[in-house]
Image (tube, rainbow, N blue to C red; front, side):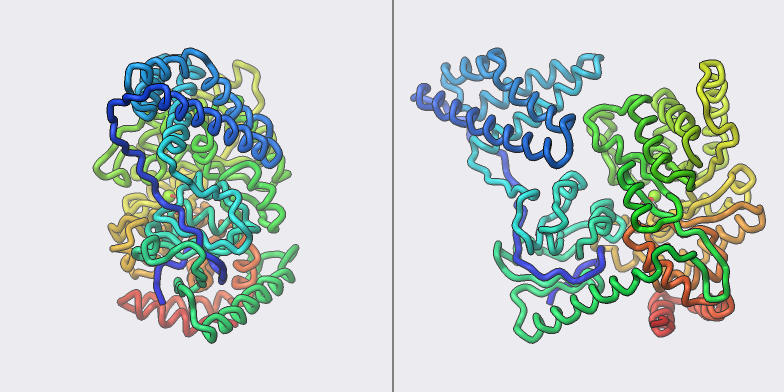
Length: 568
Ligand code: PEP
Ligand code: MG
């Protein structure tokens, strides 16, 4: 048996498909038979066009024409005589096809990326894609097409990038195993959204398995079995059925009010990453959106989304919610989220660097575009603004000052917006927690980001497997911090929510009931689970448990007590 971090609940049983990392290095030898090399190059171009056209067709039918057009433009570019012609010229003087492709593409990339025009800069990204695809074909690298793996596949990769995750078809992938990543890495969050069992940070998993091995992925416990014995396999088939049955039972909480056993009604919101997810939040019976991670809009694009594009996305989400709360978190990039077209500097300590509100306040022009778009969307629903990674009062004041300026502009331009739009802080740094009383005076609401709060309080990188044993929301320091934040919010009379992953943790929920959390924001697929757990606890019982928990000194003791106190 192997172990890793349980990142997405459930049991997956299936056949392994390893997604290899490929190596694009080649030897740039002098070519004698240039005619033969030209033929090899022509064949690669043909294959590129065929594959691209097939992918464009698939994307057109599955996603939409706009996305397919990007790939179609690649075919047009490579058919342009200047590009392929320049490559052929280099081959004719004895360069190998790989070197010709690399040199010509790099020349165009350099040229386009220097241009100020956004459209031209996009061309640089397109040519980078073309270069990668052509080199893979020339070097005979066969990449797994994640979108077309057969049903019952267990995907195994060193890491799963958000773009890889977005190709996954839920009906075909039974489980996910990776060598790096933690519970709150963004791929883990996406795996949960797709309801695919996942175990991350399984040491050396890519080298320990081969294609077609059978695997069991226990995403609840973090256990992995490769080619299991008959009795283990049959045991897990029963467990998988049990899990599916429990999921079905939760359906009885659909449409019910969220309330504790003694009638306290916290709100139960959802975390989303795209406007389409807002639909999923409603289908899963969420009561609003407590966290719209707006950075996914930026990450899914090859250019900075314009005010209009952002406005339409936020408006779509607001309208889908039909008057229910939509808390939009302003751009939170940096850390483990990079956006290539922003050309952010590589940093020694990205999680401690130019991230989130720090980046936004340093780039007020683009931040204003986002704030304008959010304000304009506020005319179409109950929109609130949330600021990530706040560490000091000056930051929230600076955002509010900027909003005041933008509101004046919008008034002058005659745009409608919610004049009393609420602005809240994400409390996810130890500094924000320590000054929660001061921040509360400047905020309309708080939302606790336990994913980062745990990382920063415990000083552990949230994706680093070697220190994952310290990454726990059940550490006494993290619990004290959370209780303190909620107390400060209560004293100031502002609501305190939680949008970190801990809000949906069945062991954590009674503590949050006791502390008096007013809003839980969870992955849409966990709404009914959270509602079910909340319904089992009265405030009095939760208080008794929390009092004992808060008197304990170690995470192990706390976890043992919470596990013992689970209500079936
Ligand atoms: C958090 O830090 O808890 C959070 C919700 O934000 P993210 O996971 O996007 O950093
Ligand atoms: Mg965070």
